[in-house]
Image (cartoon, rainbow, N blue to C red; front, side, top):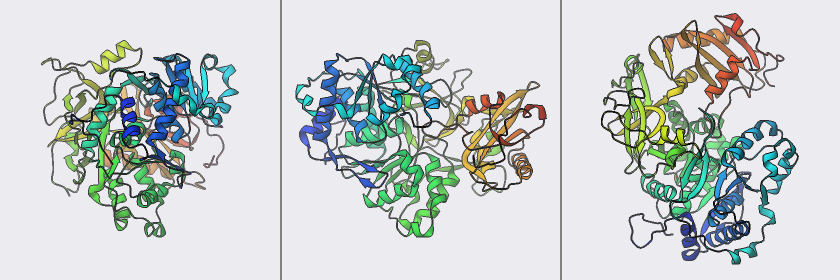
Length: 602
């Protein structure tokens, strides 16, 4: 199988259209993608020639509508159809918008966000599967924007149209798609990604992630998330290597099937957020371990949410008998505004976990201590080294000057991988994508909104600026507080807690919202609340102001699993949380919360 060397003079596709056309011409019958139905049953492999023909047919149909430059929603369940639709948009010069498909039974919750995206992008087309269209048909009267769009189902497209396709000869600087942000910190915005962004960054990832001509990938990350689309689907096309796709729902239903597929298809590269590794380790039983072979796995990408070193350690401990090695883990950091990854751990190296003085860390100071110290130590995982030539600066978010080497600050990055800005949002684009260091004039930089530091060439992420909890001058990161709570009891649902602060009497106060497992049965809620208060006081030396034990469905997450702390905070302040029990130093604060009934399994 042939890979593209970005430094080579002989092979230089500059757009994704040229890339797929090259693959279809030079390796037409090679295995491009296979979808695993229900995570297990493979579809016939889709070759590059077949994908090219499907893309030309879709592109030709869009060309009949004179759609060049228009925006088109992609609304599909995970599968091969969405890849063809995405490529078909590119073949017509149409700007694709991958978005989460509406779910039966959750339309009233999912359609308002979809409507907001349609309005923001002024989308005029939608490519869908018939099953998705049937769900939306009954809701069009409530959303007039949907009636103004041209809806095209994949099932209705005649493949013979491929012969009528005309090459749009798109320039490398033309927009390929809009990646709508997940909304973990703000109103979703459309990140503008050009063909050049994607081709340049795919070349970076080929090198930084250690892809080889014989690499094999699998992904269950959704196509509407940057991790799933860029590294999960576009990078295999760039590399010219096979890619297996699973549905996110099939992973959640049977997480160990992901691992079984890695062994069965001799997968070398795959990616997931931290929670996925935790879920696999918790679900694994002795009988499962004996059936798994993870020896082919070379790079286990770990990004999209805070990385917990204890989860990594547990995963290695659980699956080492299956051939999983500590050096297989590849912690990484990235964001859609940078196309994907800013940093990642080089293949074959050992992940770095650094021991810091906890007291100094609370004051944004980085002081290394010897591993194994009994108390006052903060362990933080590195997120790898910068991807290729990426320029990283650590900057004071208030003064906009560079931090000292031993200080935590906002992560700023600069490279051609940086996206073109936010769709139709000039002020937000200027604020985020055109930052300059105040005293030196260096720039422009992309402001990531994330806090972190560089140490010995390794990038460390400490949290989001807007999620940071500051109590009496000390910094506390919500993921640390949430982890402290969730290990206290089996009834606490892992990865479904939120820590945030509210203001009361002019002071910042800590609030903990923690979901309980379904069918938890009879539980001592007063005892659990007391345990949380004691644990937070002992481990973090702060007092908890309010604690909510909530029913499943309370802790909102983005598509990639990021906790939407600001939305949960707002629901808390509005009293819009369906609780099992709540406590506060100020009882009036939680008195009006809806306790529903007493069944924690609702």
